[in-house]
Image (cartoon, rainbow over all chains, first blue to last red; front, side, top):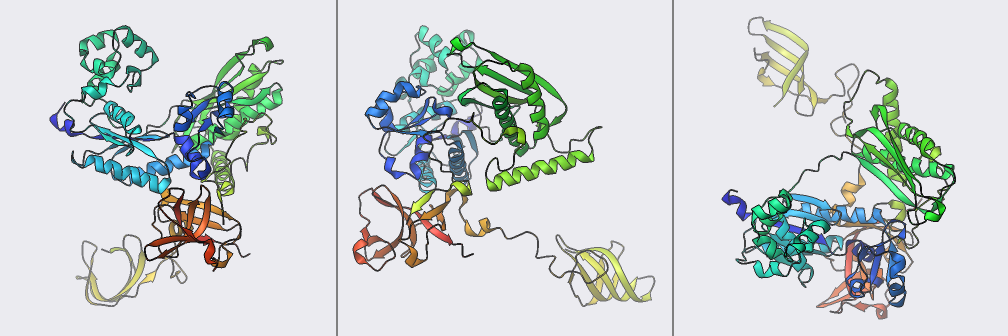
Length: 425
Length: 184
């Protein structure tokens, strides 16, 4: 490690209860009320406001289990509205990019920023400036933790979450042991459930204890990643900012159905739709897929109806992102794995072996390919302009009985002209 | 710096050795324009550059060097007008919102109109704003009188003015920058 790296300052910007904050943006009535957002199909609770956390509602808890608390306390419930969250996430990230620092978008609601250009004394003020700008511009509250390494900035972010100002800097603090002592080992970034169990068995219960363990011990007992975490806790950067997004290797679209699906026709429509979504997604990133996998399964919790799960993969003769071809392939797979008499709960499509589509021509390319490509482009443009599924394939169906359950959706989309938020005048 | 593309017409060569012409119609190429120039009394050097003694330039904007009068607008028409560029200055902070209700018709905002709202701006006096009033978002006018700030509905009725005080359930959410109203 060269000495210059020690002056590194990384900030982790994390949106507070992101999905809940998105729902609150156009609905101030729920500003100080307990709110939860449910996962696809209204299955589990995936985002909670602080008020909901205080009621003891757990992250990831199935909706039906928390229903009693929810009804008793008048908790506001929302189905997930990913197009809204996606748009607001993009706005937050674009706002962060205005600060001219290297940025790594880590997830839908988190980003790392390199603030090394600022001095030790001003960096906390910069953090506050960033927080205020994001709040003013997008209406999304964030917490910002600043430290020498990614792992430490995650620790700082934990502390910032509990502070009024929402910003914590560990830069310039000589002895951070008292802080690390309060961080439980399972809250340390990069320590998963298995590793937590292992560390606890060996008497490591908090971040300070891990920091002070010898590298050789950690390396011998866990792996290199474990020792990397310990090094990072000591303030030695081991995990770099990944500013360039690596192109994806695969693309999966799968959903649980709103109600159980039995008929081949309905299953076919669902698979065709997932196929269209997946193809559109890889087209938007100018990728082509080499092979396609389709999988179906029944609910593992309703064994009395019989359990069945199967999947199959086939290769395309030529890598493609053409919806017509992927749907054709997917349906032929489905025909071979579909079994009559089961109540299917989930299906999905996986496109793999993705590679860049630009300038790819081979012996079998023809003028027809160009025509199909331009057809796909017009479909994508139309759907972008007039809303999803304006143009679709007939095999994808029109009624969509199998569609997801979304009983509590706010139905607002800031990026869709036909679902704009309305405001009273 | 213009580069010589080709000589279209030469007129009265005076001396072969120095390649000097009385006048020359040439096609020049700058970074993004092609144009024709009439040059008087000049010669072409070995490096394909033009030396002039007297210059008269008539720029023609070229569509395609060919027959017919070239379109004079080639240099200006590049893309369609993109309203996003002109109506949205701060992309991440700008929201498009639909109006519901008729309380603002006096100030030209009708039921069903589209508002372009910039959350990053501070309101000026008489700005139209989206405000949070008792935990509901509404369209209002922002009025400042000495040190007091009010929200009004555009009507002259003074009683419906709302004072913006320190209470946190009345605040400005964003500033309306454009109203899009269909008249067809």
